[in-house]
Length: 192
Image (cartoon, rainbow, N blue to C red; front, top):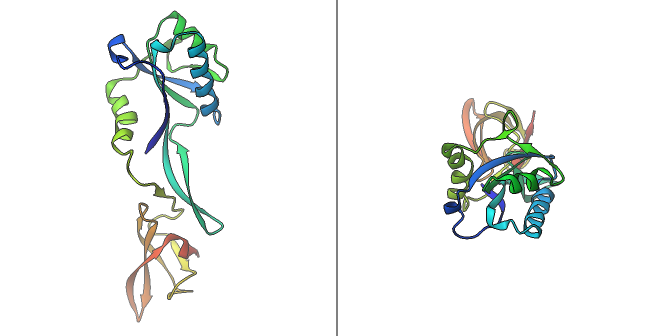
């Protein structure tokens, strides 16, 4: 997993009492809203009260028209994560930024994320940052497929295993009356 982020504040951000908050924002505008928020807090001179502003994403390999490409997918569409000090000025700046709905919380009061939530949503992403992109496989174990390429062209079988990291699948096909596993690229099969 990766994450789009902007570091805005200084190195001593945690010592200033910064906490992580989640913002509800207009979906499909997360990047422009984040950029607008960063621009506004710098103009107002409030950047010392802000740390990272994050759009959690993961890289996925998709194939369209026979060509592979790496695409970033948002893990939480319509949400931004902001590391900040909450006071009247920062609250007002965030709330009056175009596209921002509100902080998540109860009864209109922003509630910071718990430590376990931060570790799950950000800590895990940090540790997986170097992980290669996953391949988007539109099949599930047990699906019936027809092989459309390779030495087993036109054979039909059942998907036995899926390796998303490498984009490979194992299909059980019947050869000489026996069920035989065959390793294939995911694009070599189609639903039957």
